[in-house]
Length: 257
Image 1 (cartoon, rainbow, N blue to C red):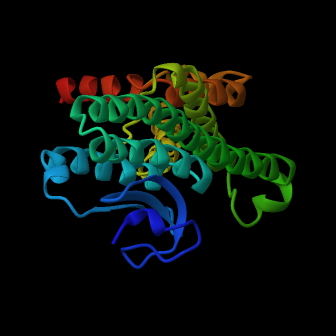
Image 2: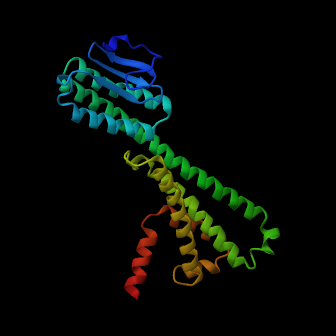
């Protein structure tokens, strides 16, 4: 039975409704089904020679598309990948099929890295907005909160410095965004978590730096300054923005001990 009889909207040979036909002939067919999955089949064993390598590559990059992109972009890339099957079944040209996969792969990688980079920075922005919102609420409601949270000025300074550490981490994230290299084999959620953890690291850095100052382990003179709160905020930003300050500080104390 010829595959040329199949049309868009019909149930295909693999019991999936045909959404778009990429290629069809008497002996073979390649199509996108209603779930945007690449489907193909062929009668001739000769057509399937050397097909394993092509199928593995297409399946791999098809799965990457499903993880990275929204439905429309994913569909566009998968139709390009399906052309590799078409060239194998129509022309029996494995080199051309590999070139199609390679060209599509480059486009997927380039677009995918931008998508993941956006996920990374957007998660950082979202967390930073939350931190700024909390910071504003604390500053403008200091007196009303002092009875319940800030039993002393010192606790207020610790919380404020910690929050500014998160803001400093966002500054670092923006400055390093051009050199940030996402891994497309990892899901969006991993890069979203990466962006959140970078801001969380800034919070921890801000907390460490203010504890060091308060305990006279580092720059104890800041406490005696008339502008101590502003200096705390500045040092919190520096601690959060630096990815070397806290590790170097820890090493120094390790050497002393």
